[in-house]
Length: 581
Ligand code: ASP
Image 1 (cartoon, rainbow, N blue to C red):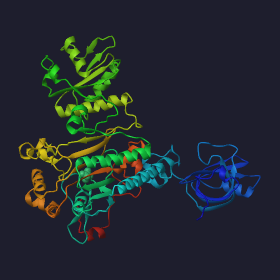
Image 2: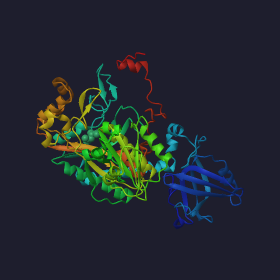
Image 3: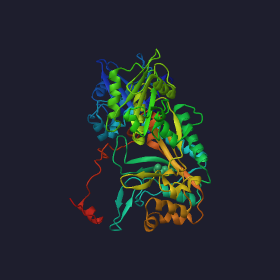
Image 4: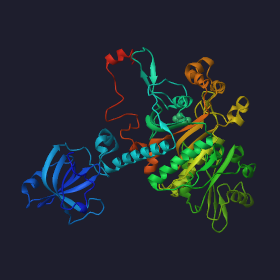
């Protein structure tokens, strides 16, 4: 090895030792008589000291070294007079007797510091330099640690990691596929997997019993902030289990990670049904770090002459504790907030429950004190509270109030990234009606099993059928989801039929799976957790990009290698592709 130690390990214990270090010039300071260089590697920073009086020649050499030069230095570990107790090597420095320049560097386009002067786009273009920055490097180290812990945990639970293919077949469900043309099969295409769903089910039929894989998945979806076209899942499947076993196993995994990484110990995760999540939080991934549950007012507010409420399918509100002092201006801001097109409410009704016990609402014209008292009762409000109410179509109003609830929580500082509130949302509906295409879609995916007790409803009222499907949610973010699967050919066929597949299409797309079901398929189910998102959550960040070594930008581009890119005419020809402009 070129070095005897790393730049992160020398301390007073090594005093007077002869050492050789390798690393990059992080910073240099020329103080006339003395020159100092911070030498950096993956492990830390060590100060190199050069004294003009002791060794003029090497001191002058040190002054010529530029930022990010790669050095091999030899010298003696000395105690520092000016100690920096913030870093592990801060009590020592190296009196250098020899410098070897392993490589030079041109001036980097931004500073390699935690608070760099480089903008996002520039850092992405020079991601290898961005990765030299401690903050970014730490994220990848965390990712590695989380991956190792996941593998350890699952290995101990008898899961085995099996790789599934990346060149597969396009399927019409779910998101859009990325496709790859096949040179040897003119006019035919592979698709990159959106998830290894069918393969992991086939592995259960093969008898592997407990499978997992840290696996790249690909979805050609419209890009939203912080979504990556390729991302990593912790993909898992188990046989001979019930939903309960899966929830317990993966709750165990989540608890293990929180303990190891954050030193947080959780009791049982809360579980709520999809129906309750919608009723109390208006969304299927509620942030339960704070309460502010929805309260329904339909019964007590209708038929009092207020048309907005009378015409509404749903009148619901939240109680913001201690917010009675909200000014006119603040209430106007909230009204503007809910009226934004992406939130979609038409207005906001409020009620102030003053500390002196009096009540003042924005609809006093329509409701007398006794009636408003009923609101207070319904919300279990206390003097000092502010009640905010929305009304309208059920789904829209739930969604809008859900956003308002989060907005209030942000304003009140209830969404502390250091606090974690995990929960399971269970009993998702099997199907989802799509107004635009006038058909049902699988809420999770077409392989999810209906609850056995709901099977009789499949023909009569498909929308009411619940599935054995579940999501793991932490702090309002869906960390993962899965389901118990169909393992019977006929039921799978029926499900595909419900989703609008013709007999031939079903056979062409999923014939291999239904065939396999006929050879002794065991009952099975599984889950997939978003690995990038999990790392971001554990790292205390909203951005998954920070936890991916080479991410794509918001437009799905890799600006470093400049991809996607055109291919040559020769390649196009070989692939039997003609581009029409
Ligand atoms: N394959 C599913 C997904 O990617 C997860 C599962 O059902 O296991 O969302």
